[in-house]
Image (cartoon, rainbow, N blue to C red; front, side, top):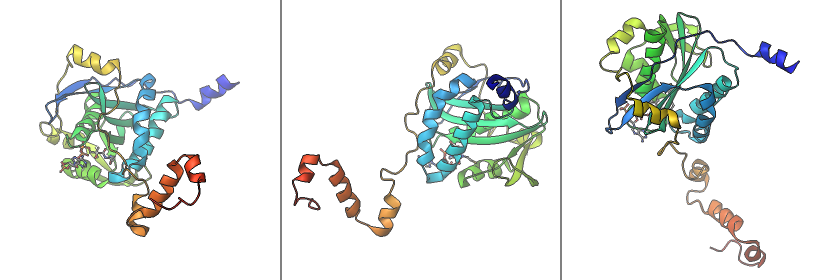
Length: 261
Ligand SMILES: CC(C)(COP(=O)(O)OP(=O)(O)OC[C@H]1O[C@@H](n2cnc3c(N)ncnc32)[C@H](O)[C@@H]1OP(=O)(O)O)[C@@H](O)C(=O)NCCC(=O)NCCS
């Protein structure tokens, strides 16, 4: 019974061609590989997305929580025709991009998440997914939205995307923008970089293991920093509370010491 029900719950993916991996040199001089991952690799990626759910800065929180759900949906067969690409530098996870094939002609860009900042890694990964939709699969256009000002600058402004405001995007039903083949052609040579085939050793290193990002975005050291700034600028109340908790029971029971620092 459970097996039969699973057959109903599980969407059947259409056979789209795979993304051919590519590589490029990023501004640091390092080589970065962008490749499609399999379902089996998703559990190696999720632990690196989860901590970003707590990073409010630059909207990493909302984007990461959605990426987590989409990756899990892909892993657990609860999304139709989704794909996931990763960017890796020396095996380290540097970016995640994903999307969906809504119809053979229409693509849906889901998310772009950079786990290393300042090298346009997210921009390169986004360009790779557009290449997947338009060049590899041959779709007519890709629907896109931005959830952050940096995203808006990177996609809507840098590519000068077309408005498709009459179409609500899958991400929250907000008005869509679109990347067409014509717009993409104009971006080639500037925004779209990389070479194929990926040298065998480089690809092997990337496929071997998805290594943790070495310098991912992090939340502020104190999650209550904002509250503290507003109501307790010196942070004294929180520090006292923490020291009290951290102190061994024998010392706190000694009496008379609480509140002294
Ligand atoms: C949007 C995103 C994918 C772009 O990635 P990217 O192209 O690699 O660019 P970065 O995020 O590293 O840099 C963006 C800007 O911040 C600056 N920046 C550089 N290092 C930075 C750092 N350590 N911290 C913050 N900003 C930094 C860059 O100089 C850059 O400015 P520029 O646009 O003038 O070049 C990435 O910012 C991201 O993952 N953001 C959170 C999720 C998100 O918004 N996704 C897109 C949803 S639409």
